[in-house]
Amino acid sequence: MNTGIIELLAFGMIAIIAGVFLLVSMIRELTSTERHKWFLGIGLSTGIIAFSLKIGLIIVFSMFPGPMLALFPEREYEQVLIPGPSERELRSAPGKGSYTWKALPESAPFPRDNLPSLEKIALGKRLFFDKRLSADDSLSCASCHEISVEKGGSDGLPASIGINGQHGNRNAPTVLNAAFQQVLFWDGRAASLEDQAKGPLVNPIEMGMPSLESVVEKVRKIPEYKEIFSQAFAMERPITIDNIAKAIATYERTLITPDSPYDRFVRGDSSALSEKQIRGMALFESTGCIQCHSGPNFSGASVFGDNTPYRIFPAVPHTEFEIQHHLSEDLGAAYPTKDSDRGIWRIPSLRNINRTSPYFHNGSVESLKEAVRIMARVQLNKKLSNSNVDDKSIQWSETDSQFSVSEHQALSDTEVDEIVAFLQSLDGELPTHFLPKGVTSFQ
Image 1 (cartoon, rainbow, N blue to C red):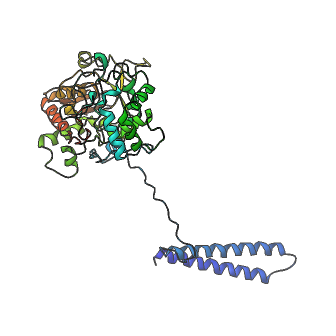
Image 2 (image 1 turned 180 degrees about the vertical axis):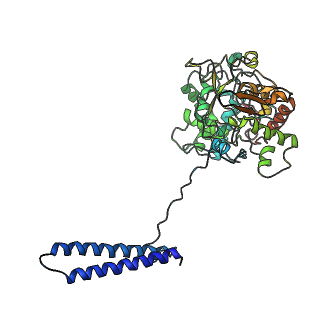
Image 3 (image 1 turned 30 degrees about the vertical axis):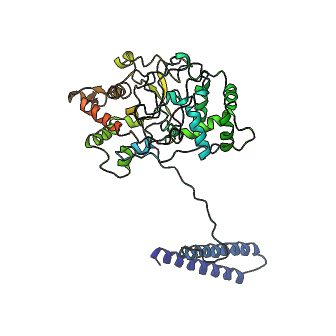
């Protein structure tokens, strides 16, 4: 028993004795004429005794870690997980000079109203590759999202070609790892893969169906789909537009690439990256790329992020790159408001970026190295220079009589090459199940 508890017990005993002495004295001096004083003394002495007993009980019970009596069973509580700090908080925490790198999970999250099944995945595969879902039977989802090493879930074109040879005005985003994005399309107008799957079907310059109802009627007339839909959805009339979208989305959630060299490195394989790629990885952090391309999917618009999924692009206005590559002719999510000449875009994932050229929303840049240079200039306001003089900014404040020195203000050609080498390490193993068994194409 420690000294503090002994002192409190001694104080309590003294207080109890004093209270008892006071109570006895008042009883001895009791007279009818002074009864009001007697009541006052009784109350005072009783309060002293009660207070002293309470202190004693608190001290005694605090000496035992568990319950002293088995009269009341312990209550079981549900474990509540408190979210950890965000990526932004980790980066700015005192004493934390580094970013926490994470590997991609080996399975994608599914919404509660569209849980996966083998039957639903198989159906989604057929629909994804079925050209009969377009108005002229010429295009499928896979036409613009080719699952191959060469195309990486995109189509390799600046802008996709729809029915009747029509050209769109935006580059096709990759479908690989789209399951980890919280908003879809370049302007983020779809909140889920299910919402996204419906859009191209009725876009007049993509698959060109006149309405979602016409898509349903066309699928209902294809004999083999009746049984397949019945197996995937236990409903009286399973062929609906929502179920078509759910099946496609369920299949797309299997198109993930969690086994890139980067993932193996983060999981503990120190030989998975070259020295050049490791230097590029460190530069990716120190240069500021992680401000937008963060988390396991390298996108602030992913399900792992807690910040806004959108960014202004280009953030630095009127650079030579903006003019050369027409980066502000399409303003993305900002277009309907016309409040700014800066575009607003969903932050794309950088996974498999080495396979998905050309780059940016308009597909105006072929080279990944050039895309890195452009991002450094128009988003991070870095100089592109091999001179050490340009790498440091020194400014004098006449008001404070202090210097402000900023390091790493330029990217050299070597540093750009190192970042590109790191980005190439994000190429993951392609899923081998993307085409239904025995099917090479749908006619």
